[in-house]
Image 1 (cartoon, one colour):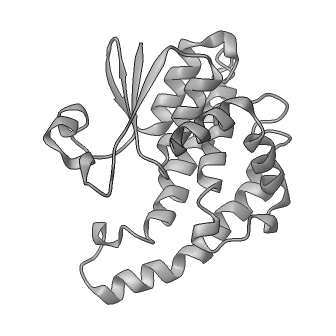
Image 2 (spheres, rainbow, N blue to C red):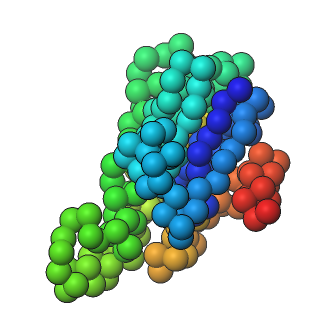
Length: 206
């Protein structure tokens, strides 16, 4: 039994969807950022970073979305969510997910997490003002240079797809028109129709 700690509106959605896609035996526990549960002593004992997601496995606890997605793909190979038999192709999957983690997510975080990088209110406003530009630029690059279609890596649905979908859900709040990237807009629509995605999104509304 796996246990996922998550919060709504966060990158944890990617792992949540992937667990559902592979038919894993798992439970999901929601944390309230409003109540600062991510910094509670109980949760910090699970993830000292005070972030979500965290995935409890029979061998220990995993953090960081790219690592969790790779773990799920390797633990459930029959789902074929990554090209596990080809080191180069698997590295390309990891490269895409690393870009989402290290660049796209960070650009988004400048909207409401400015205190991680600065102390002046004027700096917070400046960082927030840049978010529509930087997020639009990231998604334009993905559309033009990274997205193969119909799924991120081509014909095969992979762990890249729930991750891209997750970050795509942030675009409207970041004042970015997803329709400016038509391939990603189509991807978002098709992802929204997948049974695993519908189930997870409904569960988060409960």
